[in-house]
Structures are given as structure tokens and as C-alpha cells.
Length: 277
Ligand SMILES: Nc1ncnc2c1ncn2[C@@H]1O[C@H](COP(=O)(O)OP(=O)(O)OP(=O)(O)O)[C@@H](O)[C@H]1O
Ligand SMILES: [Mg+2]
Image 1 (cartoon, rainbow, N blue to C red):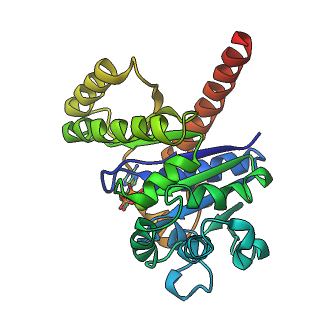
Image 2 (cartoon, rainbow, N blue to C red):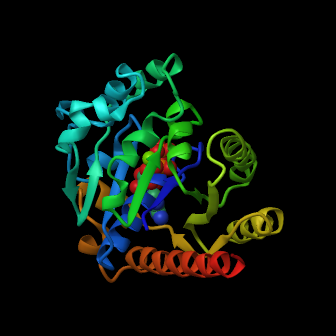
């Protein structure tokens, strides 16, 4: 069964792209087939996957979305989609690149037929070829992000240990609830991953305790925390996977541990669901 994760948080710079890429690499290393979809006009994931000039690519996510919009929401009419040439490969994963034009697609969505389902239709056309599809969302709760939440089975929330992260979380949770209510009732929150954590800082531990007491009853706050390390920025700048750049370092270890925790959480949840049937 294929699982689609939206990696989302409207707070900028909290580690969405790093989580998407490093989780993708971790899962690919365990033999899973992974496809990352860059849903951000900043195209940081695309660049970190070795495309320095995404705007020069012939086909990126906005081209696909614009074509489906032009065809009245019918993906079967899309010539670009049927060719599959838009899917690239790097670091052991397939990926669909983004480009700045995705900002314009946001405007095109406003008047589009089934404007919340355009990305779901695109992802639906290839997701069965993968074990995991990871949607790297932009730092905004706009139509493109609503499309990602509608296309996803589960949401992963990266969070920095900061007090205002907890406040911003309310807005994200309200948006997820809205999508569940109106578009995608099967959407669930897989959990929140603390990124850029420094366990020596009292402040970070305080924020973690507040998060656990306020939200721990609603969704999982993963035991694994991603430590602060300059290695993350280095790997993205060099277009290399952390597992090539610093395979024995604490970041590679933390993301591998996170992938294990995620898989065991998923497996125990599926057992619980099938036990209730
Ligand atoms: N564990 C970490 N330690 C140190 N720096 C990190 C860590 N994780 C991410 N960073 C750096 O923080 C910055 C923001 O990370 P990232 O791009 O993953 O966040 P984002 O949520 O995707 O940002 P945006 O909202 O702009 O899409 C990047 O420069 C990244 O290299
Ligand atoms: Mg990002």
C-alpha cells in the first residue's frame, strides 16, 4: 500500500524540506520506493536534489497543475502527465521538481474547477508505483497547500522548539480539521517531529514539555528529535544526501532513527485498525 505524507507547517524555516529529503533518503535506504513532490515555489527540495536552476526545467509541478486546470480537472487529458518524463531521480529517490511558477499556479487555482483536487489527481496518477510519496509543502496555508493536504493520507509536522511554534500550530490544526471535514475525511496527523533541538538548553526542554502537555493527547510527538547541526545546511548546499555526506554523524543517525520510529508507529497503528475491524 502506498502512503502519501504532507510535510507541512506554515511556519517558515522549521525544517520541512530537510525532513522531506532526509526521511525520503532514509526510507529509500531501507529499500522503499520513494517519490518526493516539491510543492513550494522556492524549490528548495528541487535544488537540494541537484537542480541548481529549476526554472530552466521543461516540466515542473506548476506545468502539470496548470495543464490539469486547463483541462477542467481531467488528468487523463494531460499529455505531460501521461509521459511521466517529469519524474526525475536523485539520492535514491524519484522526485517531481518545482519552480517559481508555482506561485502563479496559486492564482490559477482560485477559479479552477475542483480547485482543491488538482494535486490529488496528479499524485493519484503515479502513487501506486511508490511505497511513499512525500509532499514538501511551502510555508503558507494557501490553495497549493490545501491541495497537498487533500492529496495526502497523513500529515507530518516538523517543529522548532520555540514558543510561537506552538501558537502557529493552532492554525495548522484548524486547517487540517477543515480539510478533514470538507475534502479528505481519511486525513490523519501522523505526528510532530522536533527539529533543530539542543537538549542542553533548558528553554528547548521547556517548550517540549509544553507541547507534550498541550498536544500530546491529540497526536504523537515523536520521541526522536533532530539535533541542531550545520551538516544539514551543508548537505542541501552540495545537493548530497546526509547519508553520503556524513553517514556516521548525528543527523544521519537521527533521521534513520526517525524513519524507524515512523515505520513502527505506522505498523502498530495499522494493526490496531485491522484489529478493530
Ligand atoms: N537540524 C538542523 N540543524 C541546523 N540547521 C538546520 C536543521 N534542519 C534544517 N536546518 C536549516 O534551517 C534552514 C531551514 O530548513 P528547511 O529549509 O528544511 O526548512 P523549511 O521549513 O523547509 O523552510 P521553508 O519554510 O522556507 O520551506 C535551512 O537552511 C536548513 O539547512
Ligand atoms: Mg522548505
